[in-house]
Amino acid sequence: MSTASQPNSLPPVWSRRGGAAFTLVELLVVIAVVGILAGMLLPALARAQEKAKVTKVHAELYGVGLALEMYADDHDGQLPPVRVNCNSDLASHWCEFPVELAEEGYLPRGNEPGMAARMEDVFHRGHTYKYATPGPCILNDTPQGTYKLWVPDDFPQCATNTGQYYSSRTDSPVRWVIWSMGPRPESEKSRDDRAPTAGRSWYRRTGDDGVIARMATRDGDQIKTP
Image (cartoon, rainbow, N blue to C red; front, side, top):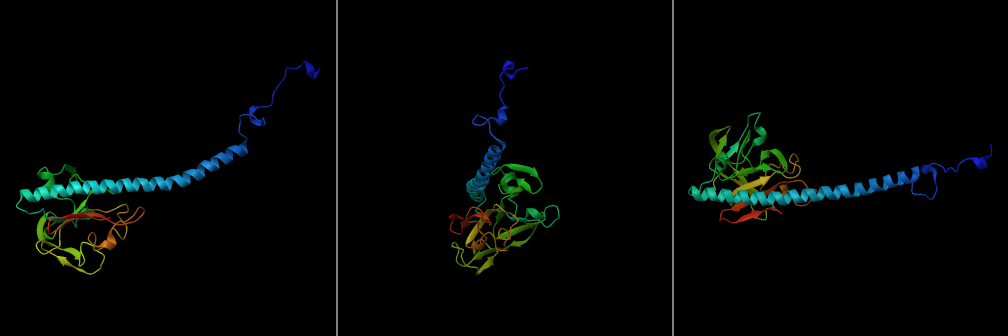
């Protein structure tokens, strides 16, 4: 049979040159370019998310600071005691946020272990923001001893590593301090033995370790870490 009598036919679309279809090589090149762009954009996105969370922490700590001052105004200048847990099931909830502020309506209440006050740390899920003040301490739900707060000699600059522990709010340059454990709660910097008042323990830039804190001075002023 003559080929002229057969209907015209075209090669498959994937093998056409100059048509709308991609060749396998072109498709692989596109995938590679998309992968490179994603690799460049993802770190920038992660940094932006971290920065947004840091901003949220500062805003929430500001609100918590107001709640603390309201409590003090209503209780003749007294502040809630510091809570320290050594029990295995609550050991990670040391310096949890004051139960009193939740019980008296200054902050929302929670019903999870270690979170009687529902002020969850943005960076440390399942835990409240931390709170400390020189003075009475509650150890494992029992009033016991005094909490001593370390304050550097050059407070509020906090650039030096020299300082001392204070057990009285009357003597301490820092009346109270509240803080987040920061983007990497388990890091050595965030868990510095003189955090959160030591400047060396502070979070300072995106991608860094360290705590994010707000402090009240003995004179009533409030300052926050960078």
